[in-house]
Amino acid sequence: RMRQTYAALAQLPEGPARDREAFAFLARLRAWISRVVPGPEFRRELREHLDALGPDGTFRVFVRSDTNVEDLPGFTGAGLNLTVPNVVGFENVLAALREVWASPFTDRSYGWRQNHMEEPEYVFPAVVVQRSFPSEKSGVMVTADVDTGRMGWLSIAVNEGVGGAVDGQGAESVLVGSGTRS
View 1: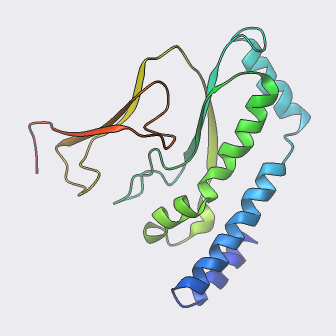
View 2: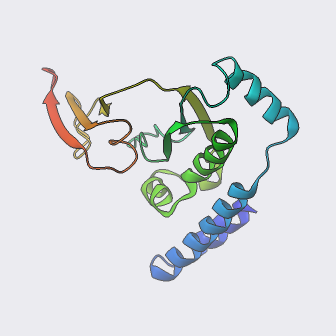
């Protein structure tokens, strides 16, 4: 169905009508993903892994996305998709998993990567669950100038607290030369 829908979208002239059709398709896809109920085997394995971290409700995790298209030539999608910080409890982790799994299909994510993909149906999202720890500051660092793509620079975004540079909160950004600029 994805292949057929993307092929039909490609036949439409670029513009608002095509965008509306694409965004409507993405909304249906996100809604479907958000209703998926992981099977009993998945739930059992997830519970085992979380139980290894401690009793339910006694620790926090980040639920993060990763896809096969976050590092395409000429494109970096780091931080583009959803990260849910400080999730507590098994059922909340399951809910966050569905949100994160659906996040590569937002209008924003789709729009950013479309110029770099010939076959958009081949976006394969994964979800990463990481135990969190108390943090006063957090951030993201990219080893290039994110505005121009020039190498030899470090683009750094930091924020007070946890997750701000990734999840859309205000963040302080700085560009630092690495000494080997091109």
